[in-house]
Structure formats: structure tokens, C-alpha cells
Image (cartoon, rainbow, N blue to C red; front, side):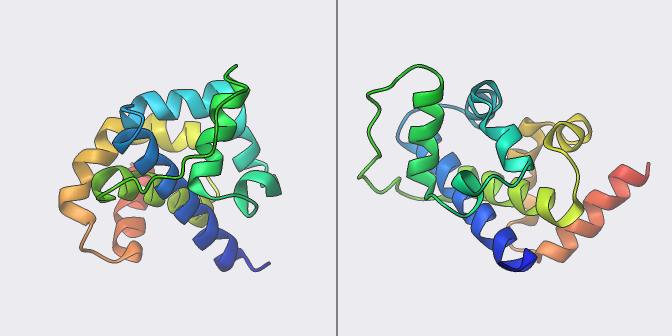
Length: 142
């Protein structure tokens, strides 16, 4: 699989997972990110583990997070998470930037905390990914 295809797949999976966690489960982006981290799945995403980077949908990813955190009976959601909006964009762009930059999620979030990603939606959701990338790189350059 090409890097571009993996980036697209992972970004879309994270986008749908964030949309489901927020729009169906009632988490905030910050709460779901905490669950991703506590479950160990965020580390597996960074290690490019196929089960979470190219081998599941956003709903399956949410189910895997719940299961890893102890809810062994969590089923894969069969409902559409509604308007994707900000939660989808946050998950998508965070995954996309991780893949494009090669930076660890912890490094990204130390410069641009998850709450800032949601605020960035209003400024960047109509812009190209490359514009977002250039602006984020400026933040990392100091």
C-alpha cells in the first residue's frame, strides 16, 4: 500500500471514529483522544499496525477502543453518526497531519492541543490540506 493511500485510509478512519465518538457516544474530542491513548490503540496507529490503519472502519475502531478499555461486549455501531462536522474534521486532519509530517501524536498535541484542533475547524475546513500543513509546520518551526 502506498503512503498516500495509507494516509487517506487512516485519516478517514480516524475522522469517522471521532464523529461516532462525539455524535453518537457523547464524548468530546478530548475524551475520545484520551480513550484512544489509554487503550494503546493510538500507539498502534503510530506503529502502523494494520488492524487500525488499513484494516477497520471508524466504527470498528471505536469498538476496538471500547473493548480494549474493558467493554468486551461493545458492538460495532450500525448507526450513521450524522453530520460529520468538526469531530470528523478533527480526527481526519490529526491523522492526516500525523502521516504527512511523521510526527508522533504526543509531539503534535504538545504544540497544537486537541481543543485547538476543534477551533481550527472554522479557519481551515475550507482550505487545502497543504495550507494546513504549511501553517502547522510554521508552528513547529517556532
